[in-house]
Image (cartoon, rainbow, N blue to C red; front, side, top):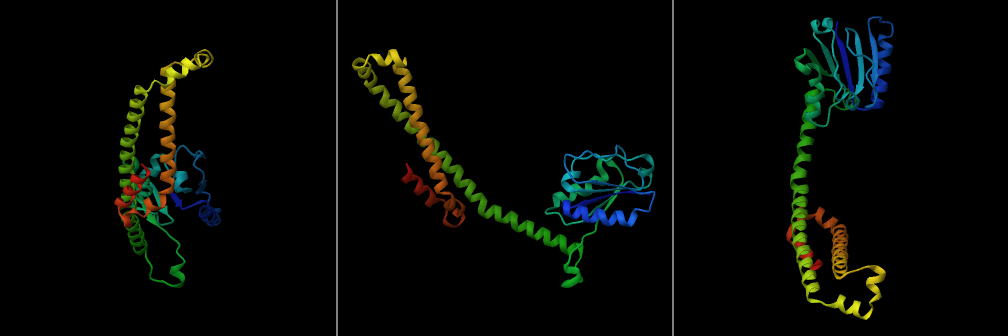
Length: 250
């Protein structure tokens, strides 16, 4: 009476589940079984009917619009079975949201195989697994806030400081060039320079400035690479020590 979408964690689990389902339903003429294991693989049916069983990975099935015929809609629509605990609530909602896309009717349920239920934790439940998942995700997000954010903030401060330093260097070079008559002296001593290279004073100064700034940029990139480990540990050491290192760099 219904159509079923089984969402698997990966291709390996899909193949195992698909083999079991085919074995159980191969003699049922009312069931049509389809596998959808690649993101680039086009879904075989344009419309779902009662008795259709689709087995897919979450990545492969993402974004696929599963339309239903009138009888399937009348019978309750698509039934989604999620065979694993997703890494976060967003993926869970995305999967079960397939049942009600566009206001359609549908249902969803977890059917998860966990070896611990057979051996160590016979009372394990889906709610327990979901709580463990949420706790782990909470720890991950807290880790980002406590460790990654200080690094990002420090890197942004360093970038701002470097840009100021770069502008200072640029200004000093330009000021030095304006005060220098080095190029005029060179062309007077070696008049063939202009004839061979067609350099005027403006060209020479612009190229000289560009070379110096590019060199500074390269030194900055190398310095950042050297500081990567310290930046990663900045949540422990605080940013002041990194800024002191940048002062040495300058």
